Picture 1 (cartoon, rainbow, N blue to C red):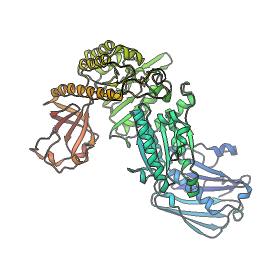
Picture 2: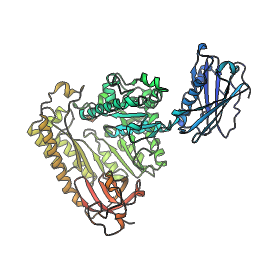
Picture 3: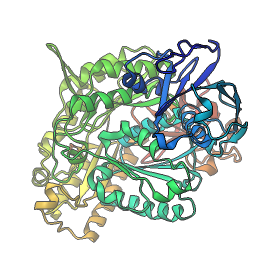
Picture 4: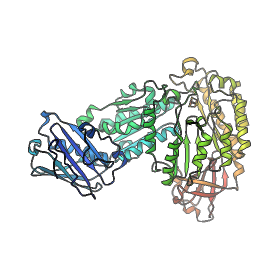
Length: 633
Ligand code: SF4
């Protein structure tokens, strides 16, 4: 190895091409740790080569598989303590791998320190330190052995509240942290990092976050090193005030999700003193309604593209964001204020991501957008709408089912229904929230349609796609909702025959038009009563409608074991529909699956069916669930 006389850099890589190597280069005021891997994970190869820039020259290990980390030294910090070097090493290794048993042996040989590292999961075989005056730089020339106690696999616990957008954001952060060596854990008490993805749509969702933070505060009394990151809509809405909470280390809004993994890595305490200081960081957008600038958009898109496997989701199913934000300003809704303006992702980026997901076994895609039917992307003289996007996704051979949620009744165009009718990969399921059946309330909500227009829309959908299943959302107790308004909502539910409806009690959200201008004047008891009644009405209609499935055989995509653990074990001879088994089906646990129309189907079957399509004969039905028997093919 020759050293460059000007900067002490090695002038060529001396290590074998077949192993990962690590170089530590000591400059008079800087330490550079430099890693070269045979196969460097993307998260490392994407780190900026900032030291090359500073030096104004290309380092010998230049290339996509090299990464550098560095720390500045001041002359007073010399000689460099061994612990300092080892801390740097630890930091580097923490970034690239998850060794859970490792030790470093540091020995001095002439001008080179050699470090041999033994781990059970890291393939670095040799590490060399180069410096012109090694003795000067190090406090200790004798061999040391150093075991990194914190090189255990770091654990991540995730709590996710709210919509599918949040689930996707959580998955993106989980994917990035897995690549940095994290493993998911079930309990917050086992975690090194707790990620709380928040929702602001209802007060109840925010109250649950606040109560969770109380628990975290308690947890931190015994485990002060835990890093708590609060992200999502509530983080954007509450901002600095949330950061002041004793338990919280990181606050980041939905537009700042790409920064979250790095913020977490930086917040991880290096020692107990560090933990006691309790590092804090915030990343939210001050003027959220300003159009997302292209750099932020690009950053979000790049981050989105890292999500290309199904490791965090139901097997063989994935969410893919088509749009962000919302421009509708329904008077009760906080979303436009926390997720910013509507932005559609380029169709090419979406298709590229789905192709990667398909290569990794994904068969069902759910395109996400707050108002997905408003998807709009202009490229040259071509305008892409949702119908175009659906057709492009359908052209990907191994994708079998394509869902899209959520739609706004005022944004639909007939082409979407036609895409659904013409291509059976586009599943016949629509989620179109009506919110109310009263024109007066719909106006006060700024929804932009009347009850009749809503009914006309779903009637058009059923004409073009006769078997389409439609789900809706309703808010009861909106300011000023009278018995007459409420009756109009009941009428709409009766007429529409929804597959299911999500019914919520109105709760004022700070910052929204309704909170500022309208009095929350429907008593809590009345809201509760209306909520119960509407659910009963919806359930009775669905229960009756679902009877038509009895005796039919439906194709389902199996999600996995039933969420009811007592039914997961094959220890009963009673089947999912409550009947006694007459064949060997009882030997299998209860599985949960969905049809293309999004009906939930439960049946007994081998767990290995998870992620696969199956045929199930429906033997019984209820308002929200179909029960069946696996058809042997
Ligand atoms: S369409 Fe209305 S309810 Fe839906 S996210 Fe936008 S503002 Fe909120």
